[in-house]
Amino acid sequence: MDSRIHDLISNYIYPQLGGVRFIGIHGMRGIGKTTLARAIHDDICQDFDRTCFLSNVREMSKNNGLVSLQEKLLSKILMAKIKNIEDEYTGAAMIGRRLCRIKVLVVIDDVDQLTKLEKLAESRNWFGPGSRIIITTTDFQLLKAHDVDATYKANGLNSNEALQLLSLKAFKKFPPPEDYLHLCHHILGYAQGLPLALVVLGSFLFGRSTDEWTSATDRLKNTPHKRIIEVLWISFDGLDERDREIFLHIACFYKGKDKDRVTQILDYCQLDPVIGLSVLADRSLITFSNNELWMHDLLQEMGWEIVREQSPKEPGKRSRLWSHEDINDVLKGNKGTDSIQGKVMELTKLQVAHWNPEAFSNLSQLSS
Image (spheres, helix red, strand yellow):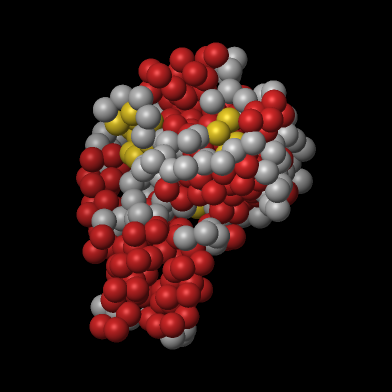
C-alpha cells in the first residue's frame, strides 16, 4: 500500500502545483479505492487550506439527496454550518462561488453518475489555485467524460500484502500462526488479491479452529460468501438489461474465450456486444488479455449465483447451465424449460451420457 500511495502522490497529486487538478481512481468494487484515497488524504491534508472527504456518494445521495452532500462539502471547507440549500443547482452555484479562492483537497468517493459529480465539482474554476479533487469510481467512462487530468487504476494486492491483510484480520497479528499458514493460502487463492474478500473472510474466521477454517474453505467451493457477493452485485445492478445479459453469458460460458468469436455470438443474440463489452471493461467487470475475455473469479462466482437464484432447486428453470452435473441432470430427466438460453458442454474427458432426446425439444430459447 505504501508504494501505491507514494506513486499516486508523486506522479498524480503534486505535478502542476499551481493549477487545479482532478484525479480519478478507478477499479472494481472492493479493490481498495476508498482505502487508497483515504490514505492519500491523510498523508497530504496538511498541504491544503481546507479538506473534505465525501464518503460513499452513491449511497448517501440515494438516501439523503445530493443537497446533503453539497451542504457537507460547504460546511467542512467554510468551517460553518451550511444548511437549507434550496436545491442541487443552488448548491452547485454556491460551491463555485464560495470555494473559488480556497486551496482545497476534496475526495469524492464512490461516484456512480456524472450528473452527481458535476453538482459537486463541475469545473476547476470552482476551486482555488493548487486545489486537488480526487474522485473514486468503478466507472472509467465517467472519469473520461469529466475530463480529469489523470487516472489511476487500482489493482489487487500482491501475495505478501494479501497475506498480511488476511492475517491482521484473522489473527490480529502478522505473520499468521504456522499451523494456519496452509489454510491462509487457500483463502488467498480464493480472494485473488481482492481486499474486500480478505477483510470479510479474515473477520469471519477470527478465533476459529483449524477444523473450522477447513470447513469454511470447503464451503466456499460451492457457496460464495454472502457479504462479498452483496458488494460486488452493486456494479451488476448498475448495468442496463443487455449489458447484464452479456455479463452473465461471459461469467457462465465465455471467460477465457476469444473476444472476436464471443462478439459474433453475442451479436447473433442481438445484445450489441461492441458497446456492451466496452461498458463492462470501463466498469472493471471484465478485462481483455491477448484478445481473450477475462473476469475476476469472484465476479464470475457472483454471476453464477445470480443465475442460481433464478431457480435454486430446479436447474432446468434457470437461464443458463454450465455445470456438467446440472446439464446431465436436466437432459437425462427431461427437466429443461424454455427459460434456458444457453448451456456449455466442454467435457474435459470423454463421458457416457444417457440423455433423453425429447429434452432438447423443451429448450426453445437455447442459443449456445
